[in-house]
Structures are given as structure tokens and as C-alpha cells.
Image (cartoon, rainbow, N blue to C red; front, side, top):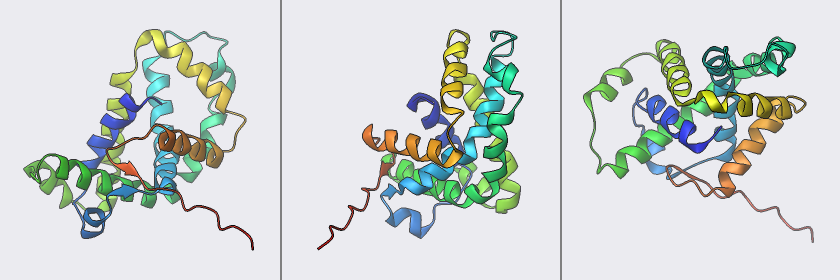
Length: 186
């Protein structure tokens, strides 16, 4: 998923949480939390692609042949990935708020009052719509090809790989925390 798709999705998700002291103190996100966000958001992205690209994709293409098997393992991991994805969102919101000079908006405060269990379906709907809105019809075949290339990998490897690519991309809002260097054996 391109940064231009990920960034707006994260921005909408960020509105769904209150800025916490922990998120304010942490100027970066952990790669593991980014990986959790990938695990969590992948079914939302898959559904957006299936809906948005339905008429552009070939009837014998990967999504038609796969019949949802690729995404089932991601769906099974969404609940476990939510806390890390939620932490990423709080950090993103704190970073975004700081970039705007600390301005708070009433919508964020209103949404923050919702219990987390009520918030999750709201976030899912918004993210799915934003991803669908970013998909261009002429990119549907490329997205499907990318999914097919990733499909043999376990979800954790896909999440880790995409988090690693984000680290290499030098994303700044929010920044990805440096990985702990391996300790050299003595």
C-alpha cells in the first residue's frame, strides 16, 4: 500500500482516539505497532480493493481464484493486532497535533469520549472508505498482482516486510523508532 493511501487512513484513524500522555511522550512509533496496524488494516484494504476494483479485475484473476483465502489469516489476527494498531493511531494523532501547533479539534474530543469497543467499527468504516477513495481504477490490476505476490507469505512476514519498507522510506509523521541494534556476541 502506498504512503499516500496509508497516511490519510492513519489520519482518519488518529481522529478516533484521545491524545494520551504516553503517545505525547513517544515521538516515534515502534515497528511492531506499525506491523500490527498492517495486520489490522489489511482486511479493510482487501475489502476496499474487492469493492472498488470489482469491475476492473479479470474473472480469472487472483482475487477470483483465491476466493478470500489470502485474507482469512489476516482477519483471524485482527483482534490481536488492534492494541498495537490503536497505539500507533494515538502516537500518530499526537504527532499530527504537535505538527499543527497543538490545536485540538472538537471532533477528536467527541470521538475520544467513545469507548474503545464502540470506536473500532467506526474506525473500520472510515478507513475502508478512505482506502477505497484512493484506489484509481487503472491501478486495480497492479494491486491485485501485488496481493498475489504477497499471498504465499505468512501475515506476520507481510506486516514485518511492510514495516521494514516504511523504516527504509524514512517516514516522518510519525517517525518510526530506530530498531534496537543486535547485541554483538563477545
